[in-house]
Amino acid sequence: MSCIFCDILEGKRDGHILYDDESHVAFLDKYPIDVGHSLVIPRKHHERITDMDAEDVGHLFSIVPKIANAILTSTEADAFSLAQNNGRAAKQIVPHVHIHIIPRYNSKGTVWTKRQISSDAELMELSEKVRSLLI
Image (cartoon, rainbow, N blue to C red; front, side, top):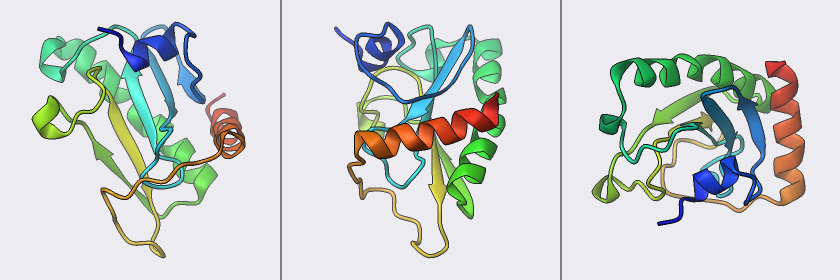
């Protein structure tokens, strides 16, 4: 079975990369809940977080604050939500472990289900802004 996130890691699909190191990659969600919605994934494919060892889970979560801070700064969001789903019944769409960082704005309220489609240019501009804060 093909994995969209593995395809992004292998360069077979485009992704607006915000962060990458030897073990993890963060990129903008193509169908964001709100502006700046991003995903942090391990390079190694695991379908569920329970398939990972505790050290790898800890390392994955340890980079989230750094990425979230850069997203908050670049989007001027007021807050953010984290989400991590495991399995189809939990609404995990892509079967590759990922953590959602979803910026939240006082002026918009908190919505979980409404998705928007950003243009490639919007995603590129935002990814460059976030990356510049992570260098």
